[in-house]
Length: 74
Image (tube, rainbow, N blue to C red; front, side, top):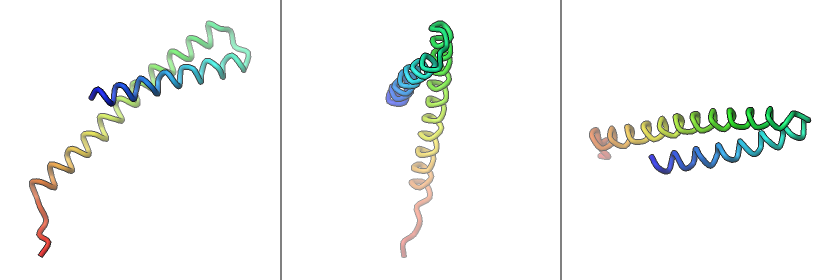
């Protein structure tokens, strides 16, 4: 879980700076750039956290299922 949160935070910081730079290049005011970048970073953090947890749960379920129901190789 710590790795998922760390990855989500890295993506959020990246998106924050990208959105801030794009906003300033498009001529938006600094307050507008900041607000949009913060909201974008929060959304990305939440989406990556949820997606990471979902993928992790799917992988764990498949591992448990394969251990409980081993297929015969004969």
